[in-house]
Amino acid sequence: MAEAKPVILILGPTAGGKTSLAISLANTLPGRGECICADSMQVYRGMDIGTAKPTPEEQAQARHHLIDIADPSDDGFSVDTWLSLAEKIIAEIRGRDRYPIIVGGTNLYVQAFLFGLFEGPEPDVTLRERLRGLAEADLRAWLERVDPVGAERIHPHDQKRTIRAIEVYELTGKRLSELQVQWTDSRPREDVIIIGLDYPTEAINRRINARVKGMIDAGLVDEVRRLHESGAIGRQASEALGYKQLVEALEGSISEEEAIEQIKIRTRRFAKQQRTWLRKFRAHPRSTWFEAEQLTPQEIVNKAITSISELASRPQSASQKTP
Image (cartoon, one colour):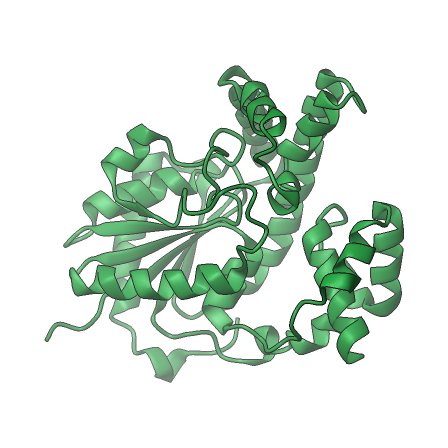
């Protein structure tokens, strides 16, 4: 029986061309591949433009998994849900002797895939409702008080993970950042090859501004309006970058112009946070990183294929170490 294909994990900042690279690799690698989206908002049906979900045309070029699998009103979709589905799909793709290509994505999903999930307490509905009733600034202050290390890792506007970190501390007396220590102290899974895309700050900021403009031109405001007016968007989905700001505009809290500018600003901040987080994976023994701004898309594809071939031939356990 042929050895199972390694998982190709594509990492890089938002608006960095990961989807395009994944599709090209899926069609070029020997035996071809299939794409698995590791994005916590692309799972929701109807949230297409603002999540930069692969378009129908892109999906027609390569098979995609884990998009459009939940209603945006569903607040129960979690990293655990995604990970269980992803592992099943990876096995199915390998059964077809193809490459599973994970496109990251949401940091937490990538972390869980590489290092597994920690065993945290079950959600406390009463405590969560209490926390959701607090102002964002009060939530942030609470998190900084009980878990300052976690506060550095969690984006100030990420209400879902802020609430979870506070909940873990209040229920266990332990900091979430300490419970997640295996993500820095444990070995990552060995059946992965990482292809990373890097950009200078100025370059990725230009790409982000262009993407936001493209989303607005493509009808993002109308997409958010339809979801909001129909009551189809739940608490979890409404926190998505872009949707949150436009919902505020639709409700009259800010103008549409202010919302669009906020989307650009917060997306650039998010990309900065991503670049900081991604640095840890440069030391992974089965990874390669490209300065994407200096290469054409086809050059990146060609170099990635060469790197995948070389890295796949390296023994796993002999060189494996924590990134």
